[in-house]
Image (tube, rainbow, N blue to C red; front, side):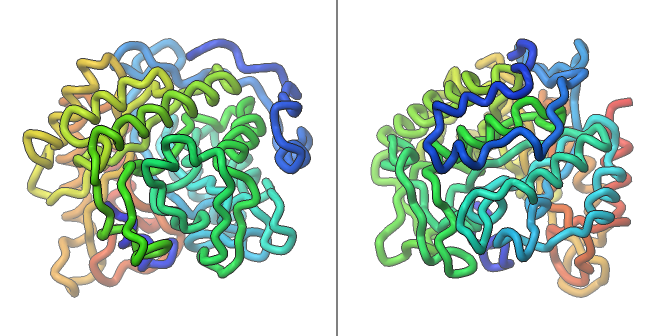
Length: 404
């Protein structure tokens, strides 16, 4: 739903962790194996792991509900990678994690094309993601690693269609039409997934893995490829699309669990009736054994506690999660606000109150957590915007809603 908006803005089960150094390098192609090494990130056994028991998330043996933020741009490091969104200094990154409630989750984009590839050598470069991981560990916070997006924004500009979900994810798609004009996806999605999961699986910063942000197995008409698919996609066969998505999550989720048996896989689904997850197909895809945690995204109007219709609405998705006996999280919740009276938007204080009402309703109906869209380090919100900036009253709301 937000692919076009983001692009216009320029961005945009539990067993013990595997032993340190168990990297399974023979499973990776030479280019990926060469990029996986043990010295850059401290590999520490987490004191506690996020687990799933029925419809609940568990932390340290107790039921756990979190509030947190999306901050897609955290791994941007201009001059090293192409980046996506603004770059944070070390002090800004540290201040961000320090400002969060205890035991939060932060969802960020760990995309190959923008965040994990050196712009000079066009080879994998983990330094920018390492920096995010170290900062999270220093403040005892956890991350959701989102590994690519539906529309390829900041990641090769390839629209993920039914053939991609049906097996094309094993092929290299390295479009030269990405955000900085150079092909920066040297590996297939499949090989990149194996490399990044292997590298970070022992880090206490890992909260969950998200294979794709807002997956939908729709088709993009040729006239709109590769960068203008969002808003023009079609769904010629819902059953085929659902089957492709289920195959993808079965396959990819199984591989993540094989490489990292300690951490959960979260669906990243938008949940609003997109191609392949329309109506009851959301439950069919979400029943995949490759998925531990379900997701929905909510950008409905402020006055609607549980938005959407009786086929694809938030209440329907929450009920389906209960039936599947899986936790569900509000992976993105966004409302526009403004720091001035211009633009006809609610004030930031009004927005904070509106978000609080939505979150209370979501938690009352079974959501295990919520992530606000989207934190930025220094952008001044002077007109209608989803941005959450330092000092935003919404941050105080998160702390007030955070479990003690």
